[in-house]
Structure formats: C-alpha cells, structure tokens
Amino acid sequence: MSNNRIYTKKTLNRRDFLKSSALIAGAAIVCPTIVPSSVFCADAPSNRITIGCIGTGGQGSGNMRGFNAKSDCQVVAVCDVDAGHRENARKRIGLDPKSSYNDFRELLARNDIDAVYIATPDHWHVPTSIAAVRAGKDVYCEKPLTLTIAEGRTLVNEVKRYGRVFQTGSQQRSGSEFRKACELVVNERIGKLHTMRVGISGNNRTCEPTWMPEPVPEGFDYDLWLGPAPCKPYHTQRCHYQFRFILEYSGGQMTNWGAHHLDIAQWGNQSDDTGPVEIRGNGEFPKTGLFTTALNAEVEYTYAGGVKMFLKRGGGTRFEGTEGWIYVNRGKLEAEPKSLLTSVIGPDEIHLYESNDHKQNFLDCIKSRKDPICNAEIGHRSSTVCHLGNIAMLLDRTLKWNPQKEQFIGDDEANRMTWRPRRAPWSL
Image 1 (cartoon, rainbow, N blue to C red):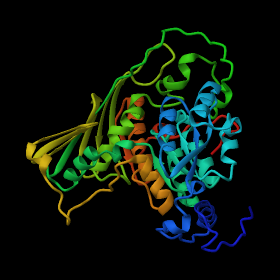
Image 2: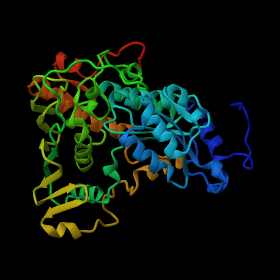
Image 3: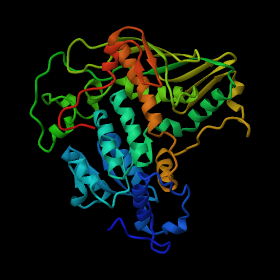
Image 4: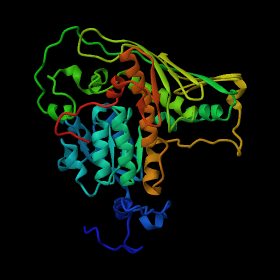
C-alpha cells in the first residue's frame, strides 16, 4: 500500500489511521486526541487492533491469551526463539504456521500488525522495544522495562521521537487498591509523608555450586536468545525463568518484585519523573554457582524532599506519615487509623490516573493516542530505582545520584555501571 494514498472519511479505517499517524508523528503533526468509532467502523472484525506477541513463555503466553480475548483486539502473530513455546502459542491462538516466527525482526516487518506485546528476558526488552517503535508499532513491554539505566533513557527518547503509545507491564498501577493507597498518600491523609518501606522476596532459585555446559536443546535458538549479552556456554538454568538470577540478563528479585513495589512507592511519592538522590545498599551475593544476583537485599534511598525509603525482604509497600500509615499489596489494603480506609477523595483533591485493566488501558490508548497509565518514562524511572539499588549493593558504598542528569555525582566507577557493552551486531 502506498504511503501517499489519500483517505476520505468513507475509506479510512482504524489500521490506515494508525499507519498514517505513525508517518506524520516524525513531522511533529499532532493527531486528533479522540477519533470517533464511526471512522473506524468499530464493529468490523478487520478493524480490531492487531497484535504480535514476542516471547511466549509463561508470562507471555498468559498475557497473549488475555489480549486475544479482548473484543477489540486480535493476536495475529507469535515469536519465540524456543520452538516449543512458539508452537504451543500458535496452536492456542489458532494461527497459521506462517504467522509463527523465530526472529522478532520478521514479525516487525509485517505491515498488518499495529502493536506488539513483549515478554522476552529482560536483556531483550529495550532492543526489541526500540526496533518495534522504529517499525511504527505501539508497544506493551513487560517489567522490569530495562536492563540498564542508560538504555532506558534511549528507549524513552525513541518512543517520543516516533510518537508511539507505550505501556510498561507494571500492572499494579491498574489495581484499585494501589491507586487508592497512593491517592490517600498524595492527598496527605496520613499527614506529611516521611518514610516508605518496600518488601521484596529473596532469590527463590538455587543452582549447584558447580555446573558444566550442556548441549543446546533442539529447536532453541540460543545465539539469538543471548543477543546483545556476552557469549556464554548453554545451561538449562541460564534460560527461561532462571535468567532473572544472572546479572548479565536481569537484576534478580531487585528488578523483579522491586519493579512492582518500588513502582508503587514512586507513584505515591509523586516521583514518576525523578528519583532518589542518595542510595546506600547492603546485599548478600552468591559465592559459587551460575547465579550472580543478590540472595538478599537491603537498600536505603533518600529523596530530595527528605523522604526515606527502606527496601528489605518482605512484600508490598508501606507509606508512613506524621498522622498515620498505609500498607498496600495485591488484594490487601491496611491503614492506621483504620478510618483512612473509608476516606473519600473529594472532587477538588488530587485524583491519580485511573485504569482498572492494564491491557485494556493500552488498547484504549492506541485508539485515543493518549499516554497509558505506565508509559515509557514511568517504566524507565521505576526500573532505575531498582538498578540504583543493585549498583549500591555491588559497590557496597553510599552513592549520590542526580536524577535530572541521570548520573552519579563524583563516581566514575558507578557511572560505568549505568550501561553495558553490547555484543555485536546488537547496537541500539
């Protein structure tokens, strides 16, 4: 289809609109905020948002089915370097074998795909997301959004440059209990906030003290799985879920559960566009074996306004103020005094972004071209707080951080840890 085609209201459908909006975004032309459903012929099956799913393991498979169950969405392609995962996903959705890919670049080359859902290992989140936005796709990418702080800023800039809708998979933001807790905090129902306490689980996977390389399983593209990461011999526990306990691919529970509960702390502290200014960490790291992320983590953060945040083993997020406290976790909301739980936020008070369905919020924003509840900037900033904790624990000293410049102050060694060298040819 020619990019120069002129559409009338009669012939313009939703997919044509999305493609034309992608073309003009680079020219700084502002698209309409709301597009009437009559323009899109919303009832027509061909006008459902088309999605390609990249990474179809446990989390990827579940959310793939969730997207495909939406009335305004259709999964039309799947991609995974594991042929078993890929084939299972294809059959579950009922796709033709030609819509199943080993290499995500082939999926992104399809002009009939509007958006992608990315559930790869963490070291692939940003490279795949950047390739997707450059291909004109809107993106829903799992948390933690980034492997390094520097690549996160690159991603944010590319999302803005190409005018794409981007949702980070920090779905707790679409939970009513988390929104209510944060609204009570920002409206000072607990008085002036002074302390936040965040709990994350310990490393829940163990590896033998010694390990030997294993043959790569048939149907698994291990070289592409490694991608920009260093070339290392294959082992079963290096891949799939266990990747998150190896620093070359992830950041352990610090970036796993931390990306959830630290994200809520950032929201309640109104720090979505900034972060702490001082970090002190104390971590216990494995001395042998394949895994390299912290077994246990304790981190103290200080924000510019004086708010302290303490991270240790546990779960959920607790906000403490001069007149009470609020604790929130999945399906749980506690407070002291208990009357806070029935407190109503008035029409003239601060109301936070409301989403009750993370996937639907993304789909709705594809149509409206508005920002989703957890856009690239928010996902990057929350991931940064996780990375800061890991860096402080690895260096075992107090670090000063400039959240505006996104650099450590007077610490070259720490600044070198905000990025990683990338294996050729995988540059951003």
